[in-house]
Image (cartoon, rainbow, N blue to C red):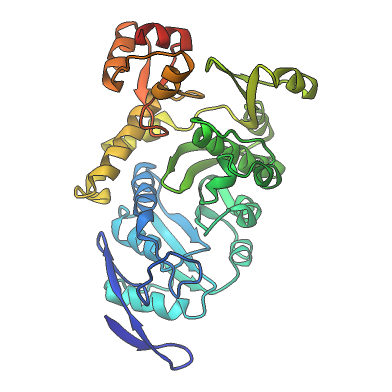
Length: 391
């Protein structure tokens, strides 16, 4: 515990927590994570922060200008200063609208023996959108709000630089995953699915929404690392400038169709076709049907000493990261879920995931486990081929 006086000379008692190489003051210990917290820190989002560090260390970019409009406790930026390779950071901007943010962050800098170089570390206390728009541009922008990222997307897209990286987190998964389809239509301009595919569909709906904003400014936002975990969706985009590149992105905005036998496809069908398909097929979208990962980046990320970033004691997170890297080898739209196949095709005798994977590989199909389902696989095999192997 530590104590200090805030701007109103009120004595604050601060709890100190450790995350990797960083110590931070988190205020009063809270039983529930809430945006009303004195200092916003969510320990369950550690992997979210880990992935940022692994990715930035793998991009091989130097002298980056990093902007964090919603810094909260400042933990992500502090970890950047300690864990990113030398030369990556040129300037890092911390911003949060909390009253005591600057005071608390300066204390955290001292606590971690990080000297505040005015040419490198810039601290402000502004509205997040105002902070973004008042700057000339960033090589990396972190949008990690409590809830939907929608209020911050336009300003972030406008200020991300050419070849810059835009990192987006969305925690309003209930709308994107189909619990509240009307909310999804209002906020993300698409129809979700409420079945075993819901999190992939939600992730792809979110990608399209952000790409549409990019298109307004002739910026093609290409996903380079995307995943769904716990209660949030996470996407890193590379910003590419140019009308032709934007047009190529927009071509990959289509509908997702799936029938009662789990055969799925992408489609550009019109409204009349939608009506005729209702009896035979479910549909979702429009959504992004393209790749979720950048192959070269993933290879670089696998070479990184990621266990040091994630922590070898966090075995589940290490396993999750390794599964993501393997999944990139079959980076295609949709996946199959074993229990769902057994139910739809009335298969009584189950098959273990490893056994199914092995059999499909023997039949020369690409196959990998997916992080989107405990019993799911990504494969270029058809549903008929999968069922044949299962019987």
